[in-house]
Image 1 (spheres, rainbow, N blue to C red):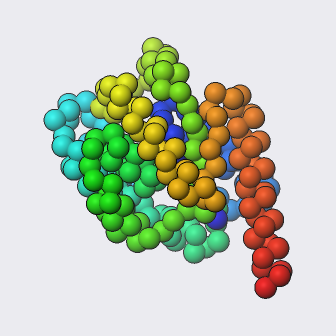
Image 2: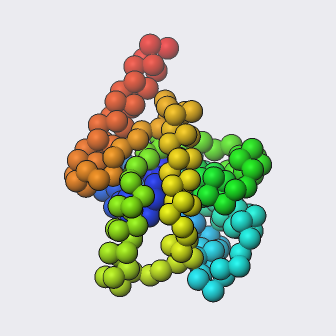
Length: 216
């Protein structure tokens, strides 16, 4: 099974990724947890480039191509082989980030980005997308708090409030358009409550699949 966590920085994606990984491993499953951009040597190098504050002049199309290049490497080198081995794969971000950030946020054509991400992923679609929804102002407050505590600033932290609102709207639109795949969770809840909701949803999904297999 392939599970993706999406949402703004500060929504708790990384925390939930690790919690789910630990819970699945404790239950006896083989699990791979990864992130975007990154997860491979090439992907981590691309991550450094796209996040570097000195690259503020980077064009939106350049951004989209770099993120997609990192994604293509991650899918081919890591995700597909892990799925072929029967492992659970959990990713902190995936192709939907490009649609939201470079599409609605940066203004690139959505159809073009969809074609680009399909090419980069070779049509690999996750079984579940967990979107951690967070009010824009609360997300900015959390991010500032993290920076005040020594967190690293990156180029994507230097956007306008309207940019982040557009990104959020894009995510919510994608969730509405593919409601069977997406689980929208309010990220203002306690960490444990979010984790419990995700586990419950995955358990229900696995049970439905088991029944379909038995019925067939």
